Length: 298
Image 1 (cartoon, rainbow, N blue to C red):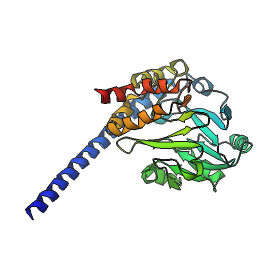
Image 2 (image 1 turned 120 degrees about the horizontal axis):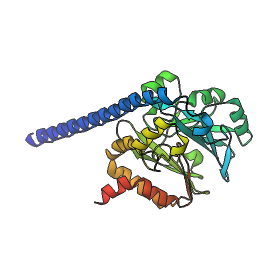
Image 3 (image 1 turned 180 degrees about the horizontal axis):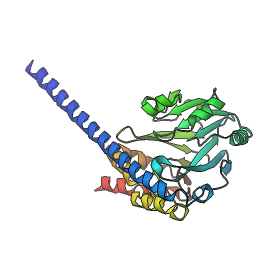
Image 4 (image 1 turned 90 degrees about the vertical axis):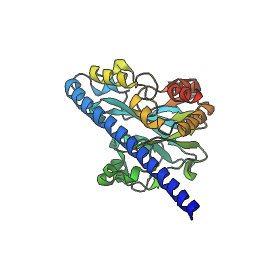
């Protein structure tokens, strides 16, 4: 009995410690978000008039652009999360059966939908992290038979539930059956609910990320957004500092995942915000994640 009580006490202590860690992580994430929101809204008011959509983004907008065989990128009009003006990008993959797979869908327009339908039928909508889901509803309404995939936990977020967005399937830490022949996938973990699914298109050796790397070009940004993003480390082809805090919480597991990405030896790396990396993808990944990998090497 004494041994049993000792075991239960140890388990309770371990659980309490885990809960405290989770609570601290949530508070860190919430504090970062609130701070960024306050700064961002102020910047937005001051700089909204300074840059047009085409200057910040990568025209032509809302137009599929062939990146490699069966892979297209679609650059959308800038978004303004927490008041910061950012370019945004969707990637489209045509699967072996001809169906289209939309990664991090941008805003829906009838013209864009028509252009995509000329390539193939839209069957999969993918939300690869907890931030890249806000345009899903319009796509779901236009294509009710398409399957919507989201990272684990996305469906439980209050904003998502209140929006009416439907999450049909949770993404797993391995390729899903509908695209296993074309795409590898996995999930990089973090704290405060953050997870990001990555995808690797084997035929073109293209790695798809959203927020794990940001590669914003300062000259394309409004002055205040430029200053905010430079301070966040989002203009150097690496992970923004506010996100590093969350990833370090599960740093060993995240580092293992990142080493796996490097081992894939991608030819190119496509990100949601900023310029893609063409050529020497593994080298760019080593630079982007040096902050994490070097910590673990010490």
